[in-house]
Length: 380
Image (tube, rainbow, N blue to C red):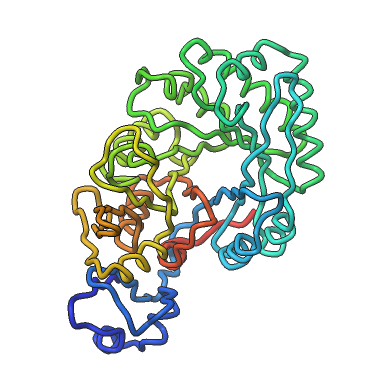
């Protein structure tokens, strides 16, 4: 159950209304200051989980920008581990000769193992800081490079105790469509004898022949036959360099997932879900400095600091608010209990395999509570 805070309400009065107590509500919603609520803030009221609820898979990508994962990320893994099937450290860059650019997982493998969370070896076609079609094409055209890559992946998976190999190749272009499918089939054939599954990230398409370099290299139907599961990246409609809007508005998310399950079995499809929002400076102009990324917890703290009332866009099923700072207006779109409940309801309605979160460094406690009450989480 979700309660939207109105002017004059306190945590005590809200708790009394729902026959609970303020301490419970503060804990469930991880409120840093229970005495200060924001008008329009969505509070989740804990419910008794349905014992017959569906079992799904969950995944969280983890990414960090320091030599080793920060302590805060390891703490979030330990805290959210019971609600996770997979953790996917992002990512191993594949070089043109098939070798992998390695990186230090720090304590991630141990933290995941202690929570019975499986890990994956994530590979990407990133070169010099961006996704590269020419790198991918060089790899697709070299059987020797592919053999080396598969050998290195299997070795790494054994070293890390990983159970899945996850491929996130992007911006391939139409010319690489069939080559990418063949590449995935060879990878699948190479890792399966070692007990490894294959998962593939997919851009958010609504038709088989959707134009655009991000979309054209991915044949949903063919990839769906090869992969054990896919992650559809149903987020980033609102993005840091674009105009302000919801990051994952429910209508476009539904359109993409309905197309996905029309060509891929629903029991192979993970819905992608952002754990973050953006703070844009207005008026928006193309070429402006990028919007600032922030967690749902940070968004609420900012609304409290700027005395801004949170509003809710019923069409997008997403919260937002406006505020002023240093003479400039800002707008923040983020996620809350209402928006994530809408996405999880859609997952349930479509019978999807699960949900994949990008990425775990952004605290969003309500998500995990609602998830655990709506679904059992599979452990491998």
